[in-house]
Length: 179
Image (cartoon, rainbow, N blue to C red; front, side, top):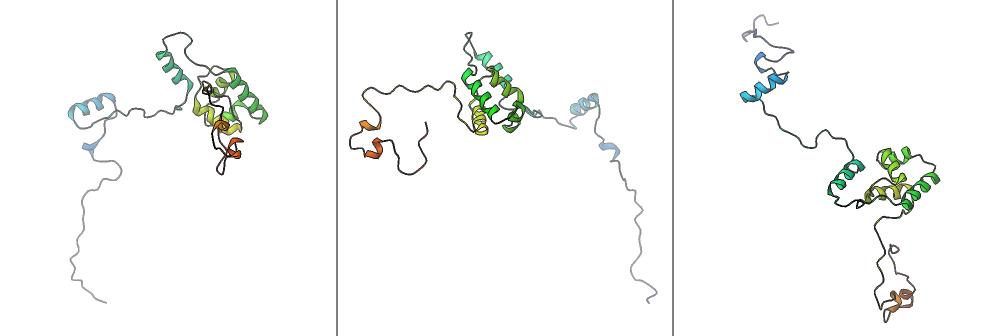
């Protein structure tokens, strides 16, 4: 065993702060202290727009307020048609779902489904699409009217040289034609 070491032995007896930070770097905790730090230029704040909100993008209250602001004549705001509200109610009861269950299934508030079924909601195609997918049926869309046929045309049968299958409305391959 060696009795002596050639490495000098030194200890570091410097002070170490454990827990609390340095005294000079404390953050202000009161409004007055924050204002003083802003004035001194020690801290900077920034305004975040739209932060902290958990509102749905399709809420009826926001849309109705916006539509009310833009409306110039009484009765220009479109409401859900009775046929749509009745169709939603029938499809929901056929699936044995409550309004709350349907609302959670389409990621909306229960009030939205209640407004659609009572006819008080402003129609939103995104919500109607969600309802159609969840209920598994086509719902009557508001504001979509069939265009009148052009004069002189009677559909695919009027095409000259059309095959019998084309005249019968049969398409080759691909998905069936949508409305």
